[in-house]
Image 1 (cartoon, rainbow, N blue to C red):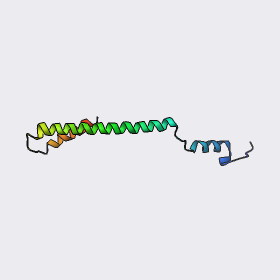
Image 2: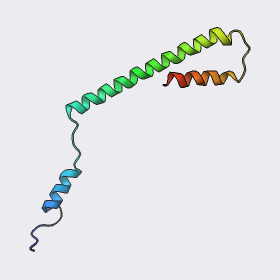
Image 3: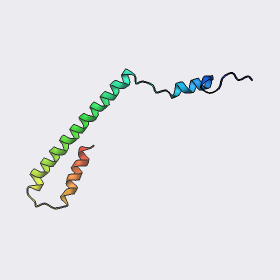
Image 4: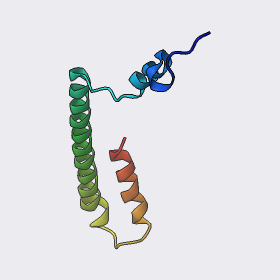
Length: 85
């Protein structure tokens, strides 16, 4: 066997260089990324609204009638967990 080229000038080296180059995103990938960001923002807004509604409801029904206790934190954390689902 006669070796004529080595390293990046060989067929293997040229193929490895092509594989290591970063590929540009396709228009579909760019649009999907924008869509994913939009869905994330909408979900965050919806979760925030749910949290605020639950907190206001709790203040109007429960907290207004009872004095503050540290056990009430459990209710607030529960509202936060529910709004994130």
